[in-house]
Length: 271
Image 1 (tube, helix red, strand yellow):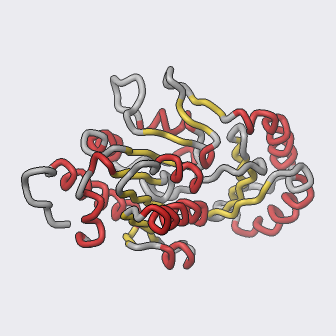
Image 2 (cartoon, helix red, strand yellow; image 1 turned 135 degrees about the horizontal axis):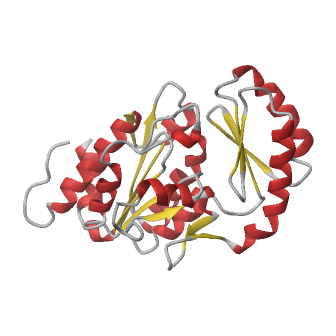
Image 3 (tube, helix red, strand yellow; image 1 turned 90 degrees about the vertical axis):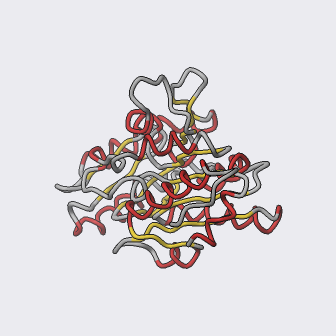
């Protein structure tokens, strides 16, 4: 493990540490609104900022959710860079959520689709309207997956939204060339090394962006799959490192924090 992560701490100031949120920094829960980062994670991310050139969270969550649950108490905004809705949202200079201009015309389309899906959703199905995206969750109603597939085909696809499968869910987003991979590409510009931690199919573009950086720029990269019983085989196959659950992800970030703070001078601690 240490030998794989080691290149990330050769020059921490030129390294990007980027991670997903759900299933990576937080456990998967039935109600997405109740998800919280593991104990100590906000402070850990903040401490990483003292050593690493880029520290970021790129999530399918709205940025407002990330700001609420990853900001440290007593601070106006986290030093960690936050991107929501797979990169369609960021944080403006005033610390508020900012939606990319390309997504703004799609807001009424998404709102209409969300309303129509919610109107006849079976008991236990959650229609999560996130502004420029909507996610249909059936974790609490496993038998509703077929309903979701049919209804999405009837309502969302004709409206021009694009389907993105997730964990017991489907997310519907505008057809924009923005995903976790495009954001990772931006964040790693000029870096010497980078890593991304993720747990789901939506994280594969981030892994692919790292692989392109390695091929094109010779960057040292590490793709970390955060595995559990629902993990897609494709994610594990694409990873350089596989850890078990958010606790494993927190352990990787903790190792990076200790190792990064020890450069230069002391020996890198054991993982």
